[in-house]
Image (cartoon, rainbow, N blue to C red; front, side, top):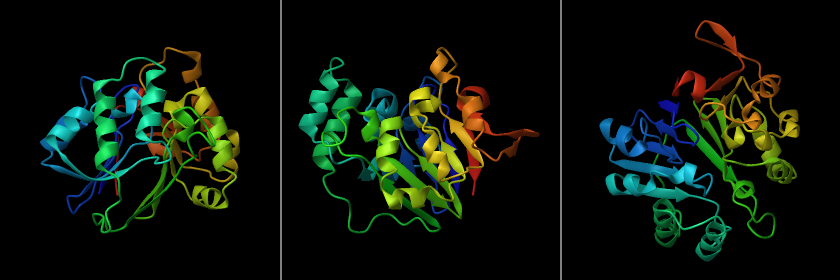
Length: 257
């Protein structure tokens, strides 16, 4: 199976294409050169078995209208602690509702239950954690859906845009802390920005590599590579030992598992 952190600039789109042809997708951010509604159909894919929305911000769902137009989505995983009405209110605080958010809100109406028999992904397991909207946090980042994904023994964490307070809240959960153990590929929260970093997380895991999904550096908050590198063992990549990989420097990143 192939797992890709696709180079969508400042956004997130992670795809898993199983050898049986079934697909998982985390978010559907895009840029002009890379959009899932294009590269998935070009690979002969017409259905997404499991779709995870890690964060309700535009850079995580920007390609959703086209994605839904071209592919069938079987199963939706999202943070269900926020209602459609609450999400509308939250999004209106920052401006008009975008077409992508309109599509997301439509999915909230239509995908109300998890299927009794989800698509089969042999040698793949996953679990999701999240904080609660309103009782825990009232912003979109700290209610990000966090996924632990294990493929043929290789464990990833995909934490959306979780910020330090959100991490600290989840670290109160013993099961969450146990899941952190064994993480080998750590997708940095909030595209590797400073407010997504929580040092306490690395008391529970020591990944081989940390991955940033982001565009070219424009802000000081993006300069976190050296800090994250302290927590990673390092891997061989391009003939060098690397502790941090990024789509901004390395393009789309792929694991053939």
